[in-house]
Length: 318
Image (cartoon, rainbow, N blue to C red; front, side, top):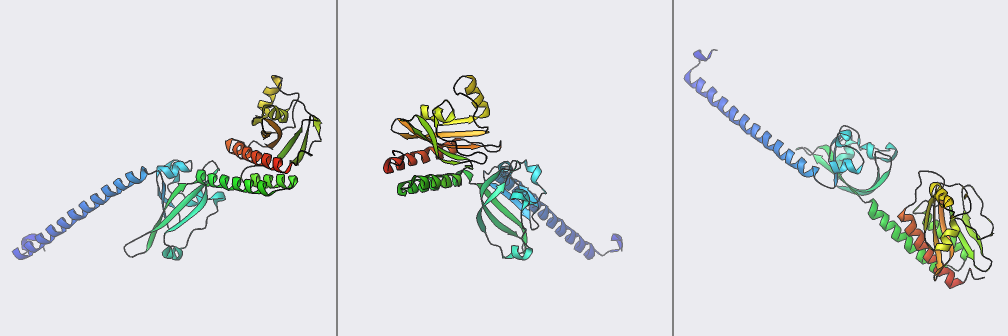
């Protein structure tokens, strides 16, 4: 029926219906525009957060991630969108939840280990919540992550120091004491090659009452010479060394000759009053093992505890 054939009542009714629909459409458009503005504002807020935030669908595909999350893991945001959250899992080991499991899921907080783009790992505190639709069905999972590597490392160091203090205070056997020190230190840092040197000032010799090494046996007692161990004993100060720094010391006449090949070396003195009576040392044979301030701090503390135990037991006075 053409509009010209319609009655006035029909035309008015249709006009009213169209106006209502247009008004509803205007409202919907306004609501949509408002929702988009709110979404943009929320994204801006989340983008500025220092805590990592990732939104993934039920299958585990990343729908959104903020710059903090991306930076924490060594990525740009665009590199993560569309990828599975297994990208954060060590060795890619990740078991996605079934929809049934997600339905039952409530807020879940746990500590974990995530992997960065370069393969290094970080310790994180993760909190996951389920996003549900109007019917209560799960549609996504939002997870916040906070790196806690430094805090956990500090806790581990404090625990190791407490163990060292406890063991050295109780020990009466020098060999068992050094074994315990090696075990505790090795639980926190790389100490596969760990040695203890002892200096005898009367005989002017260096011996090794404890020596664990992947490739060499313990050296026998030998006269004091000019080497890395002797340099620590003479200076009473910790020493980091690599083959490069070792060669520099050699060129400067600081040592007599090349030590057993290694990649990284760290020695700290065991002090009795103003003089060094021994040394704790670690070394590595591969480039992927580096020593830094953490290792130095832990070995220094261990050396102080060993010195106290030796003074108490007079084990090296025999």
